[in-house]
Length: 243
Image (cartoon, rainbow, N blue to C red; front, side, top):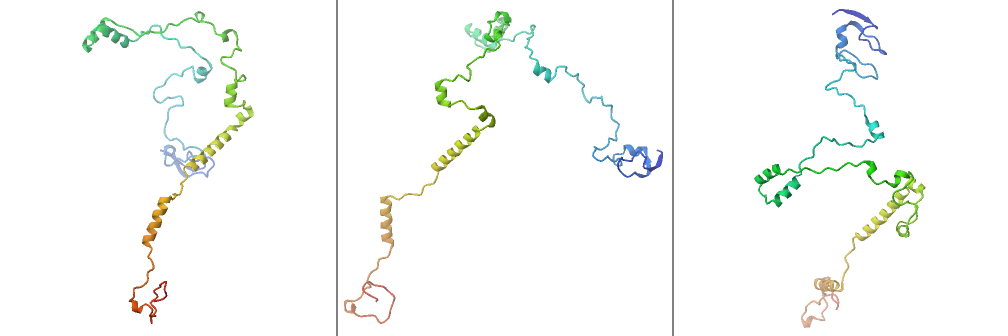
């Protein structure tokens, strides 16, 4: 390999960057570790590639009829006249049953002896078909025009909407409003109600409270000490006084 000192004109120099100084060899031009890429561009290729018209893999001929031609040109399907219809197993099995052939081995021999083929439709010429109203009247409309509405349809759907409302999508606000009202009704039905008391439950609660609450009773005393006042206050309350 021959080399030369670089002063800004070597094979390793990148446009727009300072020149590469030092010895530059031709082998450095194909070294992916030393080859620098230009700013804003993909990394340079250091291997020898085939020309641009080279095809990797199987090269197929381009179809002249693309998506544009298929979309703008309607071609009626023409079946292959040489294609043979397939066997009609349903018809052969039905015929075998009528001839009392019910075993699988016998049915195979019966189908070979009495073959039946699938029926294919017969393509008729356009002249044999009945003419349609649109064949001689290009302005003919099939169905009912939307401007002529019956009273029943008007009652169910209301007046004809304006085209401005359809284009602006104003009906979506009606849909949102109806769904919001539906959510409110569902939330009202699903709300949690507090438990309500009945007369029976109130009576049971009153009876339980009466049994649990302590009743104030007079302290027991001997009859001869009933009117004797205590000398020490025991903080025991009695309806008759402090004892």
